[in-house]
Length: 233
Image (cartoon, rainbow, N blue to C red; front, side, top):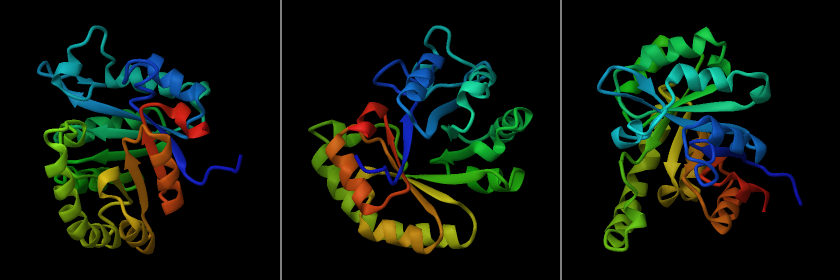
């Protein structure tokens, strides 16, 4: 088998192997040979920063705090594994950066978010951390529902037409280093525009081996999957 040309990224660790945003999921992703582990950070009503995708997820038993998650990921077993810290809301950028600094993880981390207002905040607080803009902004995947899929596909087509120019402008201005794009809005033009602007393109969330292969052929930087075992197929 030829050597892979893209970074293998585990979504929430390895959400299809073990419940996401947990140490068990991170360990499963590590065992599957990922290059990077993505996880979510959210502030709860009581003020804690926890590893959770949404408020419902934050109420699960024994949810990890940000500190607990980072303490696990900074151990020797994870040496060399990059982190994609996905901020689900704006307003706690400084706390996340300080937690990364305290553990010497800034150089290994990419901070990503759909919240455009967070991008300049993160850039000003820690210029050394890589910064990714997640697009499009959505909380649920409309492509997973047969009723909303046709409209979602039409939206994706129209969105792609406008996205490349915005991405190029942000990359060339130094506002971001990477684009984290849903697979439905990724095409050859976006790949070319990101590369020409000196950026990276990561694609989420891909749980189909054939789609992974097509994206690799397009030349994307990295692919994010709930099941990192698919990368070795």
